[in-house]
Length: 285
Image 1: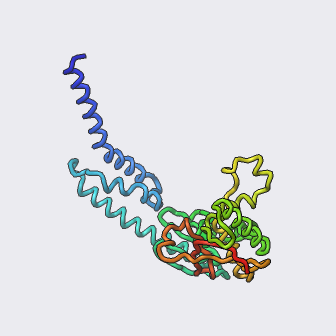
Image 2: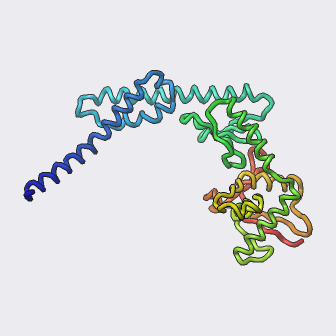
Image 3: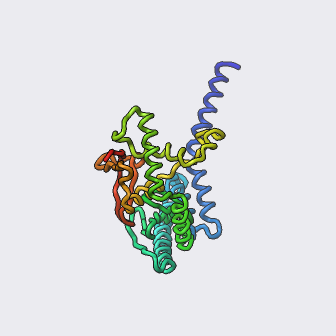
């Protein structure tokens, strides 16, 4: 092959690649229009969310389609807003109607969160999903349907209560977990540790000892953050922060220390209020 032929081959490959890049937005727009034209597609928020941007962002002006593209894109936005408002109103109305006897209050608009005491539902109307939270940690995820949300609330409450230990037992288990971290860090009784560092030893202590021998430790079921929050709240509520001459002390997270939510645990004091904690220690009384 001559140098001229090699050069031509490279030019063809480059042109082909450039053309594919130019056509990609157009191809996405065609696929999006196909999806939007499907029967019933315009009744579904998730379809509009997935495909509207592809229609809007493609450059159709060179084909004389700029005006019709802009008109369609604008109508898609208006339709999306109408459907979102309709879905929002419907789910909130249904929650109030079906949840008679439960404290149900809208907490925030962005994101849309609703207290379904003692849980909180974070409603993603566009995605058609509801995240069920306790202590600002997700316990479950369901379709955006009031009946499913309320069922999930019941299941989540039962799940947490089933996992939870009584406060006397949890105090002892938390102390063992704390001591495990002290040994790992070369620290002594009374030293503060990061509260989230207790999650790993709590997971091991919750598992049967036989699991330690037979199972890769990576497969040990993690100790849920929401369960630690529940247990700490229960300790406070039961007035069991002191036992056998030792007192558990939680260190409050303030200011910048709350930015990374993975480093702190939120312990509710009521269905709508609580405190972030960063550290923990046990002190001799």
